[in-house]
Amino acid sequence: MPRLVIVDPGHSGSVGHHGEVNRPLLEALQAGGWRPELWADVALEAEPPARVSAGRVRGVFSGCGYEDPRQWSELGGMVLLARRLQQQLDLASGDPLKEPVGAWLAHSLLPFQILGLARHLAMVPAAAVLLSLMFPPKETLEVTASLNRLQASERAAGNTRVALAALARACRQQGHRLTLAFPSRQQQELYAPLLAATGLGSAGFHPAVVGAGCSPEPVPGEAPPLVLLHWGDHKPGKGRDEALAVLHALLMQPVPAQLEGWGWLFQVHGHKPLPELERSLLQRAEAAGVGLVVLRGEVESSAMAHWLARCPLALLAYDPQRYRHRSSGMLWQWAAARASLELPAAAVGYADNWLATEATAVGLCWHSLGMLPSDQNPADGASWLAALAKAASDLPIRTQWTNYGHAVLGERFGIWCLSRLSTPAKTID
Image (cartoon, rainbow, N blue to C red):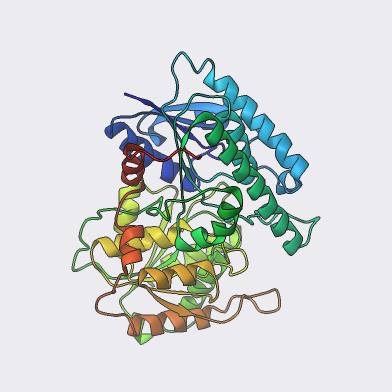
């Protein structure tokens, strides 16, 4: 079985999308005839082995994950971090002549991580290299206190170009067979100028890395429909404030007629517990009999698909500034669960962001509401509740998923990777 290495320095724990991507990816690669290894942060070695169900996990990286962006917003800082990552890759590889790697696979890499991988690839034998460019080229991770937003994003784009140029040189020099792909059409469009500038091509977009190709059990006819209020971690901008505001509205006013008999789904999962006020609100809503279902902690993928398949409506009130060009796996997971059973789906959220653009592109009904709340204009639960009621009344009998929607949602990411690894890719001339 040929050896394959997944390079994921940002994978340091069970919370977040890294585990959701890597666990099924390892299983698919192993079933497809590869001997996969996951090279992750050393902290992952402390996680229970059951969290990674196939392949081998190696703690390779330290200080190479989501470091403070102030370290890599400057070109010098990026080069320093890239060198650290390269040195750790070199150490993990040992003597490549003893057992060379047949394929390198990476996703979720920031520019300095791409640069570090490129520098390592410039020193190892020719192999297949499969890279998903998941972060937008101007990604700043929002921690740029010393720079204004425009300056930080432009520097990030410049660093991305440097990293891609180094990747092109390494593949040309060593004869690596490089395949670049993107998690959405919008990402592909954002990267097009940088690829042209560095002489790289792309394989277009690939299936969603989480949730695509799922096969949930059919929804029981007696099961009440659910509104997906919140699912995921507690990072800012993921719509938790808006979801909690809806719950508060449900406690203060009658349920809209269009939503009578519906339930409300809320997952609590994160490194830190919810603040006391939020925890108290959830307990009050549970006790009030409004149909709230609270799931606490990590939910296994098949169970997640089952719950999401029960949600004709989703509140995806993601911050339109933070998510103007940033993706969220929640949209794909929920849409894939509904699409797999050919069930209708509609979402409510802010206008003018990645979520609204991509939801419309796959065929979902998207209902936009208002402007982003501020300290002077907090989340208005009554308005969001009214918007959800309107979306429920307008829910189509059948969602017309587009060809793009079928391509993004209908096949597992691991299966797509196997097909690309089995098809010889051209080396860079």
